[in-house]
Amino acid sequence: MPRQSDFQEMHRDSERLTSCERMREQEMAGSVRHWTPKHVGCWLREEGFCDYVDLLCNKHRLDGTSLLTLSEYDLRSPPLELKVLGDIKRLMVSLRKLQKQNADVLEELGLSYDGHSPQSSTDRPIISSVYVVFVFGFMSFVMVIVHERVPDMRMYPPLPDIFLDSVPRIPWAFAMAEACGVILCSVWLLVLLLHKHRSILLRRLCNLMGTVFMLRCITMFVTSLSVPGQHLQCTGKIYGGMWAKLQRAVAIWSGFGMTLTGVQTCGDYMFSGHTVVLTMLNFFVTEYTPRSWNFIHTLSWVLNLFGIFFILAAHEHYSIDVFIAFYITTRLFLYYHTLANTRAYQQSRRARIWFPMFSFFECNVNGPVPNEYCWPFARPGFLRRLIG
Image (cartoon, rainbow, N blue to C red):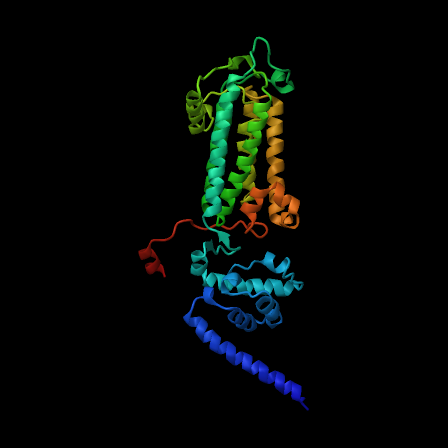
């Protein structure tokens, strides 16, 4: 026979369902961003997550806005720390459906639903772009200073180098190295344009490029190496006052530091900026394209390695310049993505202090970025009406 307590519990459940039905009618007339914790509790019950209503709604007062911005990382980490993996995954499936249905609300909040996680739509890519432009401008100015301090070739001849001493110089090789870079950059721009999570890729590239080139500014300013080849005919050049230095820096910056654009520099050897660009673009192309794209991956590595060979064959850099550039670029790329994919930095206060920019740019990316592609431009209105 049913006990009195069972009837009471059934009555309370019936009252909750009736209350939820009334709230549901109100929800249909309003926006999710105006939901109260009670509305969120009703949504959780309808989705089959009654066990978490008290934790999410009563204890942590989750409303509609905070529900839409909830991530899997939030569910796994303190203060929530859900322990049942199946519940976490099922709740995220329901949550992503809700986010998809309310994409306009997310955009009003300054977020955008991309099928992976809510991401900041504009601020971080813009800030990262400003950062890398500033670093390139600062590096151009440092290159002007370094050119004034280049060692006299009569007193400081080229240093011994196994590769440069063994391989004859090829005059046209450096132009070929830059051509490899231009092709690789074109491939990367195409990948970036079509990638569904292009804003994340852009800010990661800018962050890493800016950091590596800031390190390059320090190394080439601290120690001036002798010119690697007699063919360069480099001598210390005094540009005069600050205005003349700034004009020369702008000329280097606007020409991307490339000989193809008419830029000639001296003294900026430790370490090779061309190697950094080639290697970084190669790693981004291979990381953010599917594993099955074997042709693209092979082409990317061929351009990277041949570009490095042409730099050395032109005798424009010492072998150590190229080796250190390749090592630093690859290590920073792997270290950055390991931290981003595992979110290990969130558990370490020291990591947040030492890598404040990393924490800022990656704070709303939850795990590895899937390689998904879409057409970046919206279809014209008449075409949508015709198809849809």
